[in-house]
Amino acid sequence: MITATIPELLDSIGFEYSWEEGRGISECPFHDGAHPKDFRFSDHIGRCSSCKWIGDQTALAKSLELYNPNEIRQWLNIADLSSSYFPKDPQVNLLDNMLTIARAEICQVIEVLEEMEQNGEMKPELFYIEYTNRWSEYLDFVEYLIDKQKAILWKGCFYGLK
Image (cartoon, rainbow, N blue to C red; front, side, top):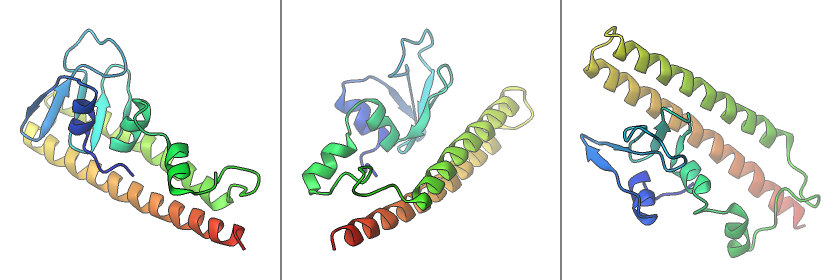
């Protein structure tokens, strides 16, 4: 997982943004948005309201082509775990699916929260708390799944090297 924050990644590509009250706002780095406030982000999560891109700093680094897992594997001298030598473990596939479902669910939850705030059904203070709590739960779950994937992959590496 990338440890650089989203603002640090945007700075690294020379992208301009504004930062207020622990949140960043800018044009989306992935499309030429007509609205300067399409892309909203914290240190670790970003979302574009126009193109619907959503992700953490690792997903942003990959999308901006600042991070290539194959290069990291080569640098660490780790075999390509997707090769036929190391067939993909079914547990890793299951965890991949769980990550996809979690991402879809958080997108839906955030969309509902934003709609409730915009319609006046939720005060901005409560929206911020709910938004932050939901993202925090999501990130904890993602980190848990990624740690499980890493454990499975490393186990496969060690067994494959015997």
